[in-house]
Image 1 (cartoon, helix red, strand yellow):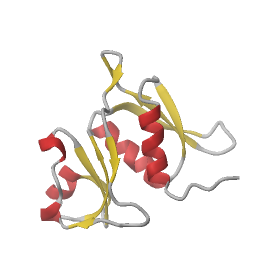
Image 2: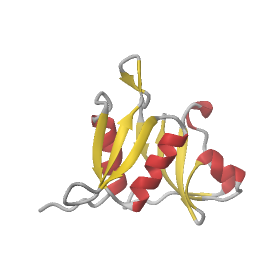
Image 3: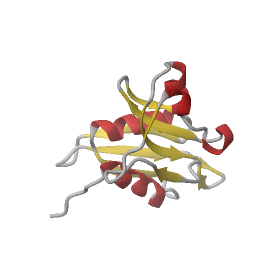
Length: 130
C-alpha cells in the first residue's frame, strides 16, 4: 500500500492528466473539496460532487471542455511539504496578469487570490491555475 505524501500535488496531477476526459475521480479530503469549489467558482471546471458509492469517498470532478480541450491549461504547486511559501495580503501574486488564479490556505479557509485580497488576509500559497 502506498501513501501519498502531498495530497494537493496528487489532486493537481490527476486534474492535469485527466484534462481531456469529461470527468475524473480523486480521493476525498476537505482541502481537495475546497480546491474543487474554487475551481468551479472561477470557471475552470463545470461541477464537482462527493461520491460515497465507492468503498472510500471520492470527489467526482466534471471538466469544462472548450473546443474539445480542457479549460485548465496549466497547474503549478507552489508551497510544498519541503518548502512552504507564505504571502501577506499585499504580496498575493497575479497569475498571468489576472488570467489565472492563485489558491491560498488562510485562517478563513481556502480562498482564491481575489477573495483573499478582498478580505485582506494572507496565508499559504498552495497553487496557481491558469
